[in-house]
Amino acid sequence: MSITRAGCMLAALLAAMPANAQSAEEPEPGGGDIVVTGQAEMQDRGTISRQARAITRKQNWHDRPLARFEDRLCPGILGLKPDYAALMIDRIRANAERLKMWMADDTGCEPNLVIAFVEDGKAAMADYERKYGYRFRLLPLEDRRDLLGADGPVRVWTMTQTRTRDGMPIYESGSLIDPPVSRQAMAHSKIYLSTREDILQVVILFDLAAVQGKSLVQLADYATMRGLARTVPPEGEQAMDTILGLFSVPSGRAPAEMTEFDRAYLASLYDSIPNLPATARILGVNRQLRLARVAEEDEGGR
Image 1 (tube, rainbow, N blue to C red):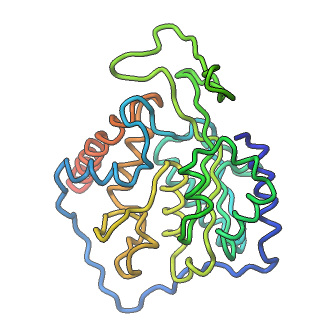
Image 2 (image 1 turned 90 degrees about the horizontal axis):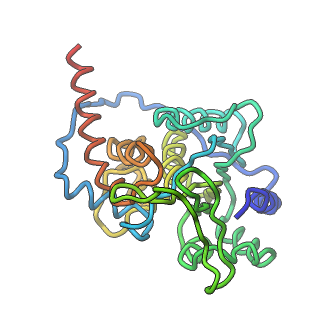
Image 3 (image 1 turned 30 degrees about the horizontal axis):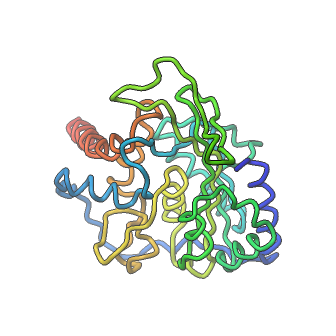
């Protein structure tokens, strides 16, 4: 889906938002709380890989890459007071810069990671689909169901495009007898793939009622994990060590920010070339966790 179409969608969603939408607020700092810091014992490699796979949207693990941003990143926020929006944007940009992502100038860029706070995201998307249903034509059925029908306080619409390893677009086919074709020289091996999956634009809708009591850091880090990667919240009763559980676990158990696992997951996704198979990214989370622990120990020994 083109960025122009995404812009039209945002305009329609803005029309559905109240003019004076309430804002998420930063909680008051605690008074006499005692904070104990320490390093948790690292889980075994198999557990980490299973968790990484569980929060990744299902796909072909061996023959497809995971989607990630390759263009300049420009976050934008709708529905918050300007001061709060600026703090969230600064946090998201800091998270992205830690990954050495290509950043757009924040003084006048066109947002391609758009976060909106609305009264009812499900109703807003349903209304948009009734008016502009043809824009969902190329959206996979599972993604369309999650976007329009799934319950929950957050909706994420990720627009991607398959490109060659060098960044040339491979356009979708309109029929089964005319599949997309990519002609490249020496573009495939046992290590990397001939194509990559680029994220063009992401729209994240938060229901206002659900964000009450959440800090701006939590919301920014959650948006980072949902926007920079095609992730899903953990399912079931097992509590995973990830900010993606922000809306599915009791408030007291939700992480205050992105966890060590979350940062390792994103570090693995944005490490090296963009056309590695998904399995390589999943297995790479263990490596990134070890590197982070070594760096922390070196820093502590100084």
